[in-house]
Image 1 (cartoon, rainbow, N blue to C red):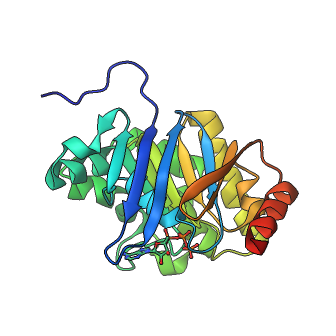
Image 2 (image 1 turned 180 degrees about the vertical axis):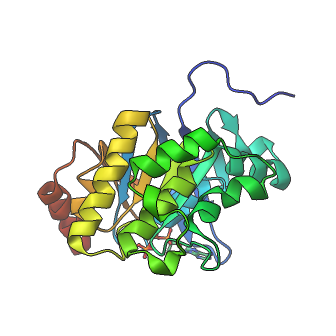
Length: 246
Ligand SMILES: Nc1ncnc2c1ncn2[C@@H]1O[C@H](COP(=O)(O)OP(=O)(O)OP(=O)(O)O)[C@@H](O)[C@H]1O
């Protein structure tokens, strides 16, 4: 049976997704949402509200207990573990707080590593375009330790984009950066969405970071309790404080 997408499927679609961990914690409770292509979505919420679980399920790293998840039109519940891994490699990019670059490899080798591990040849022109776009053209031969934090995160962003994924998940991408560098990285992510039509889902505790997104979800107790378009940092901070009082 083909799982090929027909028509413009959203980058991500969750339908009535719940996740109950062993021991009975219901980390997601009937979450439905779609992430349209070319949008920048922030996911916020107090600690333990289910943000990481949502990201893991939406990225195909974990499977829901109930409901369905489609990545770029591919229903992951229909795939076995091997196909799910392949789909993730081809269609999903990841950016982490701690960059996760391989210290012994150059920037050039780091950014193409996931593709090479998948047995695919990188598109050299695309790699060059991305590297130039993020301002790392002069740093390709350097090792990660020879770069600043902001430059390392730029390399990690290139790595996430090299396979032309349907969606990039960014987990606290500015958590380890100073304020100015964090702004630059957020501007870059926003520009990549606006210029390339890339879809980005970013989990963050920082209302200022979430305010760079097109839309912000606020989670509490495993549910999406708010969706804000063109969110403002003050508005998001207020909402989080209110949730914290409940
Ligand atoms: N592997 C697991 N096994 C059991 N319970 C888990 C597991 N992972 C998360 N949980 C629980 O599920 C709930 C949601 O956790 P999750 O990590 O998704 O929240 P979060 O919003 O990402 O939190 P934080 O902001 O602190 O990272 C919490 O109660 C957590 O303790």
